Image 1 (tube, rainbow, N blue to C red):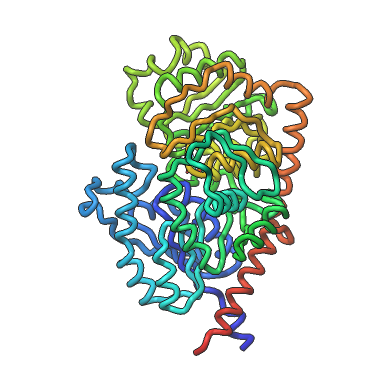
Image 2 (cartoon, rainbow, N blue to C red):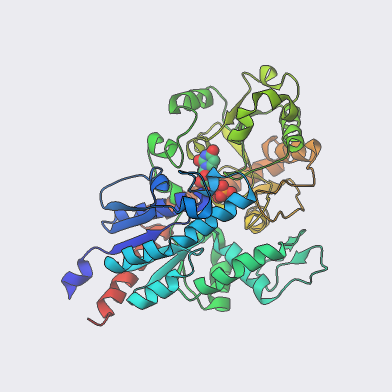
Length: 472
Ligand code: UDP
């Protein structure tokens, strides 16, 4: 019996075809690999190229049904498309993978399946095989609690704002989650609650005891905080090679940052799916200049390609005036490497959870600008509960990243938020102190004896017990 308990676990990971889901889940897979367990990541050919290979980590690749859904060859990830129709095609394509994923898993059953919640059918597959299933959706527990609360206590349709119902903190949200978003997310969330538990890319201390207890009390479901996932990468190369290939070399990036004073640089990025109209980018550019801060600004690659149109989204002479002061990265940036540099003093972020928890891990205060999906809830955990960032003040909850935002956030509001975090005021210092303290806890969490490390040990033991108790 003991021999069986000691045998390494065999796990199959099935990430959703979006950078924001795939990158963290595959990093979490590496935590299991680091403990000697065998992981197989099941994904499509072009997505497999971004995965970090290592011993004990196998990648099983599948054909993406490009022709069936009408996408060009190689376009197999949400980050590679630029409109809502194509994003739907990625979703349809990922749903069509059900048969090929199921037949692979049935032919080689693991001890546990770890799948994204956007594959709710994995529930039936796991039941059929009699194996446990863990779910991942990339949200912090705070946000899952908020979504569950809104599901249980629907917001009146004529409301313009709402207080998250029955929450440990009084959290007001000045915009409503679109009905279509709730209709899209509620069913897979409900199926997720039938799994053996959620895997959370965060650490228990960030969500806090209030929300851990609230979750267990209101859902009776289990959640294992195993992150921050990005901290599995320790060398500069591993950090820089996370996700797509960076358009900037490690050397250029680090030598530019090395030349800047401590906490002086504002880092700006809105994730892998950002479609601000030109006039909004223009306001951001004006705010950066008015703040007088040094900066790294990541803009979507499509902007970089339209050199002739550049004047539309950049004030005249912006690049020449800021040649030494700032860097515009057109394309994929080595975000984790940048955030971890001591010169970076704040992050203007869309509050995608990965970006948020990466900033937390680096102890970098945030200026929050949520756009869609889970981001409005993530923002509140940062600004209201942990108080490690300030809000730009957005009240337009977009249905999708692929629709351009309608309400312009004016430059003075952006500049004020940047100053609140980066100037030398008491408020800024307190925010920075808190952010650094939380960052330290984040880094300890994944070390031996830390909360996420111990949660992983408990989860491994739990999965081994389930295997042990399984009828032969
Ligand atoms: N990312 C990156 N470089 C980029 C853009 C994004 O490394 O230029 C990474 C970022 O570090 C994060 C992920 O891509 O891990 C984006 O996920 P997030 O949840 O922040 O936002 P999403 O793109 O899903 O909206």
